[in-house]
Length: 239
Image (cartoon, rainbow, N blue to C red):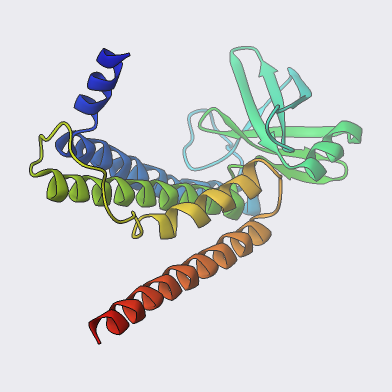
């Protein structure tokens, strides 16, 4: 309908696109800072630093009693979710496919939480860490931050092209835009693929990073090759 088209045009004027871009960049900064939190919790798990007194900080709290339920298969991911319920404590945490299989058959020796989130489950077959803990959690959050950074850059580039070709920051309509958004796509696409490899396919963070880096290298090569081809064509036309 015509009014929907007009509404869409008003909400995608260059000035408002910059607002959306700033929101994406702020969120990227927040997600990136949470990576340090994953590293700190991973350090506590490595050191098995448990709280000895109620209210003690910078340590893991043992969740006593209750029940560990699961796995709850995620519809769009090979990773699983488990739920720990003990009195007022209730938390769902993600596990890799291999760790989920371990929890199914293992004897639970203890469940440890940090800031009301399960960090580690001790079993007779070894420890099982929640996905957000340690290096894996930090890498996933950094990759998400890079994806949001790329999204913000893409929106800024698109807004700038709109302003330049349509003649103003509040221009509602204009001719079809020329050119493509390139700068923000370089970090956005590899980061999204790496995130999908971890969150959807359940791959390790090492393999997911390789997927992202190879994709990024291929994307940069394609962009540079296309730019070189266009400059060569322009040179030939100039002659």
